[in-house]
Length: 235
Image (cartoon, rainbow, N blue to C red):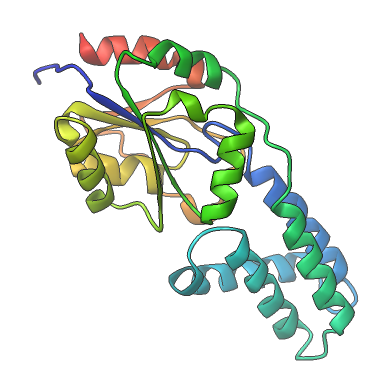
């Protein structure tokens, strides 16, 4: 395979550049506690996951859809007997998610600083528009990016469209992220490099098998290893 210079590098945001899933896990714990008089926590979590899976096609990714899924689950597990006060509490913990602090991942800032000006940097993230914009602003990482793409979903078509516009096509681009399903597999399908940076708390609906046989698949332990890997890719 001929090695070519990367003219663009895409970065995922949540749990790649800053912590995110840990706040959803905390909120889910609060949610199950609210409904403990109606069902066991494990059952509530299972029903919530099914609601999220079903509602992705309707509400997309993000806090608003998660909050609506919590309300739907509360109605289901209580057989319609959930008190209005509990619905109010669910709305409150959903709003709290929209104001959680932004904690950047180790090495994120130093890597972006090193890459700025060297190649085109684009943030490619999915989720609620307002929430993603808030987190990017509070992270202090926004100035490192040449472009920001907040998309409804991530597919090979998404990456092909973005990298054809900001790079010399996906063949000269790489996507960096913690989700195999959203960041790596579709980027590989588009013809780009897919660089997997595992996170301990990746959402279960983002789990797929690692495409280890794919020639352009790479995995690093953390972002601190990214610069060395890019050097290897570019030869």
